[in-house]
Amino acid sequence: MVVEVGYAQAWDLEARVLWRPISVKEARERDAAGLPYVVVYRMAGREAPLEVRLVSWRDHHVGLLVYDAKGRRTYDLDMRLLDDQMRLLHRYTVCWKYTGPDMAEFDQACPRVTVELFPDGRGRRTEEPRGKLGGGDITAPQVRDNERWMERPVFGERPLLSAQFHGVAETTDFEVAEAASAADDSSSHAPATSWRPPRPAQPGPIGELFRPGVRVTDGYHPEMTIVEPRSIGTLRVPSGLLAVSGPDIDHADGPHVTVPVPPGEYVLDEARARHTYHCEWEQSEVTRTDPLAVRLLVSAAPAVTWEMALTPKDDPRLFIENQISGFVTDGATGCFADAGAWEPLLALFEKGMIQADPDLDPDVYKEFSDSMYLLRTRDHASGGELAAFATTGDGTYPVWVGRTEACEVAGVVVLVEGTPELLPDRGANAGA
View (cartoon, rainbow, N blue to C red):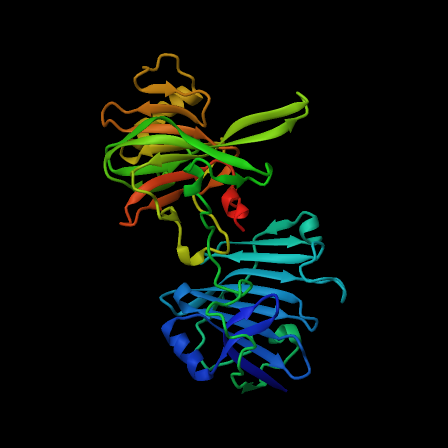
C-alpha cells in the first residue's frame, strides 16, 4: 500500500484542502527555520486525508488531525516540544467516537474522550458518553511513559502516526506528491479557517472599555454604551511590585500574580457601561449602569498592547487553545496590593472583611460603597496598600497588563465578568 505525502504552508479546516502547497525542499527549509508548515497523508481511492500534521517549532508545537473515510475528524492531538528540544509531550488529546455513519462531525451528542497530560506526571481524563449533551467522568489517565512522550521526529522520516486508527501497516511505502499550484494564490494570508498553533486566551477590547461612547455587548444585553470610568481613589505601591490576587484563600506561596511597576501612587477606577432594558417588575423601560472591569492606572500614556500576566508556575509552552491563567478566588474577591507589604495587608483585610473587627483604625481600613471595590487597607510601616474588589463568581480571573509604545506598563485590568464584544460604530454604519 502506498501513502502519498504532501506539504503546504497551511491546512484549511473547513474546506479540508491545502493552502499554498510547497516542495519538499521548501518544507525542509521551513522546518529548519521553525516556521509553520503542514504535512498531509493521503491514500489512493480515499477522498479524505488519513492524517494532517501541523509543525511549528517556534511555537513548540506539533499537531495531529486524524480523519475517517467520511472526512470527519476523529482524533486531535496537541504535542509540545520540551526537554531541551528533544521530546514531544502529548499535551492535549480529543477523540470523537461517532455512533453511526450519518452522525455529523462534532455532533453535540457524539461521545468523546479528552486527555490532558503534564510533564510532571499529572493528568486528567474526561469521558463524555453523551458528548456535550450530558455529564462526564473525570479520572486520572493511566498512561505509560511512551504514551506521554515521543522523540522529536527528524524531517524526512514519515511514520504514519495514525496507522492504528486506519488499520494500515506501519511498513507502508510513502510517495512524495508534487507541489501543485493553489487554486487561489492571490492572498498573502492563509484563510481564517486555517489550522494554526494553539494560543492562550486573547485580551479582547480591554482598552475600549474605558473609552466613553464605545458600544459593546456582553451577550446578554444586546447593546451597552461605555460611560466615563469611575475613580474610587488611589493605591500606594512603594515597593514597585504590584500584587494581583485573591485574598480569600491560603497564600503560603504569596500572591498569585505580580507585575513590576514604578514605585508610586496610582488611580483605581472601574469601567462602566449603560444599558436600557424592559423591567418585568416595573413594566417599563429601565436604564442602569453596570461595572465591567477594575483597573489600576499606571500611566497617562495609552496602552497599545495587552498581555495576560503569568503566575510563577506557568509555562507558556504548555498553554492550550484559549487557556487562561490568573488569580484564583473561592470567595468572589480579588485585590490589587503592594506585594512588598503583602502579609500585613492581608492580615488587615482578614480582620476587617472576614473577622469584622470593630476596633480597626479607620486610617488603615476603609470600606467603599456602590462600587466593585470593597475596601482598602494600609500598612503604616511601609506605606503599602491593598484594595479588594468583587468579582461575579469564583474561579480563575486573568490579569491583563497594558503596555505603551515604549513597552512600559500603562495599566493593569481585571474583567469582573466575561469579555464584552465591540459593536460597530454607528457613524461607520451610516456611511456604509
